[in-house]
Structures are given as C-alpha cells and as structure tokens.
Image (cartoon, rainbow, N blue to C red):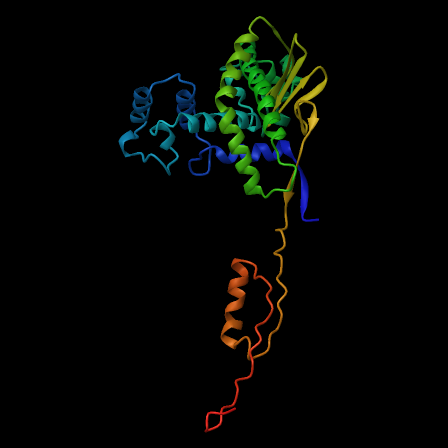
Length: 324
C-alpha cells in the first residue's frame, strides 16, 4: 500500500490555513480585515489606502505580487475573496477570544483581609467573607459576562459555522477518489474555494441576517467558551480552539464529520514506482561503450522502444587483384 486514508475535515482546514497570508509566521488581524472589506465590497480602494497610511505603510511601495500586502493594492477581487473565505473558515479553529463578551471587575465590592495562614500567595476568592469563596476562576469569569455581547458573538459564529459546513462539504465532494499527493490535494482545494468563495461570503451574510427572528438560548458559559442553541435545532459549542456545530442531534461540522458524513482523502505517502525498461545487453561491436554510458540519461527522459539489434555483416576481404 502506497497511500493512507486521512480525515478530510482536518486536511481541508490545513489546506485553507495555508492560503492565509502570514506576517512573521502569524495571522494578522488588520491585514485580513482590510482584505475582507475589499472582498465583500464594503470599502473602496482609497479607504484601504488611507488605513495603510495611518498604520505607517505606503501603498505605493507595496508590490502587486509576492508580498503579504499585495492583495490590498492589486485589485484582484477573486484572490481577495478566496483568501478572505479561507481566513474566515479557519477562524473557527482559532482560540476563543472571550474579551469580546467578558468584562473584568474594576474593583472589589467588599474589603477583604487575608488571614494569617494564607497571607503568602493568597487569592481573594478563597476567603470566607464573600459568597465567591467556592467559585473557581472560570466560574467567576462566567458570572461576569455581557449577555448581549455574547449573543451577538454567538450569532456571528453560528452563521459562519453553517456556511463553513457547506463549504467543507463542497470541497469534500470534489475530492478525487484516486490517491493524490498533498500538493495535488491542496491545488484541488484552492480550485474549489476560488470558484465558491464569493458565494460563501454572501451565504454568511444571508444566514446571519436571516436568523435575526430566531433567538439563541445560552446553555453554558465559561472563560474558555460557550454553548448556545436556537429554535431551528442547531447547537453550537465554541470552546478553546474547537468549534462543533450540531443539527437535529447530527454532527454538522466537527468531531470529524461534515454535514453528518465521514469524508476521507487517499493521500500518497510513497511515490509511484518508475516503470523500469528491461535492458538487453548487446555485444560489444553493436553497442559501443560510449552509448552505454549515455543510455541511463535517455531512460530517465522517455522509455526506449525495444528494437531488434542490427546485424552487421562481416566486411568482405578483397585481394590485391580486386577479386574476392
């Protein structure tokens, strides 16, 4: 066996992540926000140029290709949409940023005095003077979240997850059944995303605005994430760097499944063998040594057609009188 079966979900994510431009090996929020604003038609080129200048970047010095910022100046809407789609889809695998809906308490409501036995390295929530004595750090943060901001964040993530499930299903259904190399698979993913990126971005907007009449119920909140559900049967869990979407108790995106199905990629791990050409050893007179040394180079370029060796007749001996 020269190939292995790999789960498509993780391979699609890796392939999409490779499409996202990086700065010093890291994803850059400012860069991607500007690319997506152009991809969705939300900003004009002049507005993006101004944003670059405000951040100390001269748009005139950015090359049209070969630079992480090239997509901000070359006007290639197809590339902008492809990269934006890849960034949004893979953002579901990024760590949760609870700062968008969690707010720190600025000051304590009650004066707390440390007891002698815990004066060194004490923690205020371990005292018995407040009801929070039994609360963990995670529980304390969960009790201080902004419900409206959390619901707003969850609605965006819900729409993004639903659209991404469709994108992943489309990519998975275009996977060749025959074994492919990693480079061939990435090229296949790029082609599919390039063709669907514009529709994917529109689908996110449509799903987000279309769910406004439907409320979200909060099932769980912590400092590391949340779980919410809606009236249509969708349940979204966003914890740490993992996103799981379920629909009617079916794994819709996550846990190795895409819209309830398992998809796999037959990935080559050993290159296909080179078909060897059987070499017939000729006599010394028919194939000189010089040709023998050049033969391997020819075999590498193209197979040699087998041919019958030429028969060289013995040169007749002529006597001095010109007779045989």
